[in-house]
Image (cartoon, rainbow, N blue to C red; front, side, top):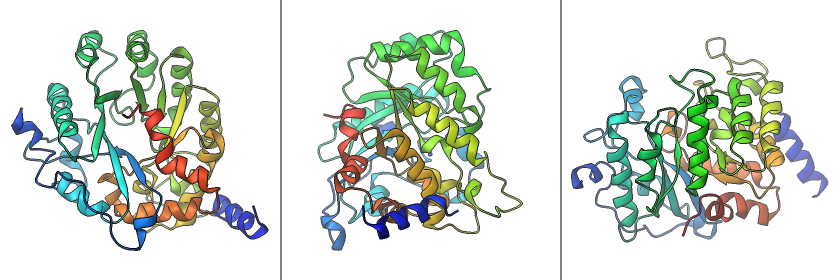
Length: 336
């Protein structure tokens, strides 16, 4: 690495989310869209964190009070528009925290979407409740579904601290490993120590840490907005990311952090310390890219997030960039 590249990296490091059901995520734009423009030669992208919804079919409880920008139609039509020219070749659908009564319907709908010829969505992480006694029967119905790669329960909202360490939850996550499925971790940054312990107790289950452990860009600002206090300190977050990276069955998803940027605006230097710490701790072989679209639209569109991340990783070796953008995803999410 040249001196100028090293100085730029150091500067960035230190500067401070039946046919009727499938219609809710699948509309007319089935075929993969052609790549055009100057970015057509860019490194291909596998998006491992794609959300899709149509409020006529799905109305997750959390969306009822969400920002108006999210209470809109986000199907493949809109996804194709958002990704046009960015060389996004495949996507992994990420569950949208629908009400438990809709868990099976969501999983079945996304399976049909993955089966559609030309669909960029080729796999899915579905929702479930590992802490409930009936979880094994629920997840076993998908054991032969080649499109269902793993499960996530959002733990940063209503779930009480420590839920993921209860005996039932741990047994359920161990069962995911027995089925060859992974578990996506999405929890409050102050509780990442629970994720470390969960990974230790489930050594045969692979874990993907969503959103850089919900790293908060505001924590890296010299003067964060008084009305938007950071969710963690820099030292505590760095420490827990390092501890989690020590677990060999964990990977990190570079995603989601832009949605936590201050409402007043963001810049690349605000995001870089989070990205670089995760890349350095987990290493080039255990990181993947995720858009968190459309949740990223709380602060930026898809293209802006991709552009920012490209700038942050620009000084890293080309082969490491390729692993982040698309090379690691097939192995980590077992894509075919």
